[in-house]
Length: 303
Ligand SMILES: [Zn+2]
Image (tube, rainbow, N blue to C red; front, side, top):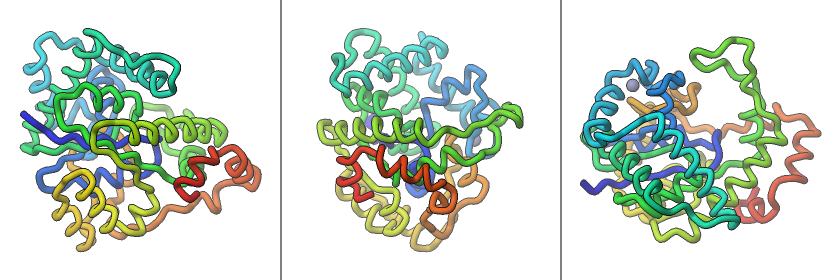
């Protein structure tokens, strides 16, 4: 079963939920952050875009049963642990410090992810999937080893917008206490932004798979031109997605794992650039961004 897998790579809070929701039309289903699905099965409370926890969602229950039937030796805890370790090693390999992981463990892990894609596609009756996991190492391994047609979309957003989105107070996830802070410092976010966008940019330029980089700001300001670019460069038919955006239909995925809960609760119809960082970040934080953001990336992506 040949599937097309659109893997979004980059850092969190760069607009991947919005892009996934735009693409979730016709023969294409957005799975959300699929790497969180096995963790959801193991008890980590991850929400589906239908509003249920993944473990309570009937759609994902059907996917889970199909996945297990396609992978009779599957041990979800072991799969989750190994996939995480391999993803981290692949990240180091992209950084040039070690060789890309190889051997039986990687083959088995990628086969299990492929079987999960097949289970998700057959349950939804589609042949194109969007995987918004974003982890660059994981995407590098899938680009190398998947039996499906993997396409990479490096989604990048103004680092100040990403920093504010991580820094602002956010409601706790399901199962978390009200007092738990999910806020991340600007320093930590910029460090991650520099590293992961540099590696994602390198992956896009070196992979043999179809791949491109896309700015969040262009996606919001010029959605039709951005979708047309994806169509051309990744050989897709996005006519229903483009029509939905033009008709200002609500952009929402039926059953996507994790992602931005705000977008889920208030489906977007009018695309508006989120620039709340202009009011949210302090002068010192903006100065920190100006000094510490990778200059090459800033030039290349015009930030
Ligand atoms: Zn659901």
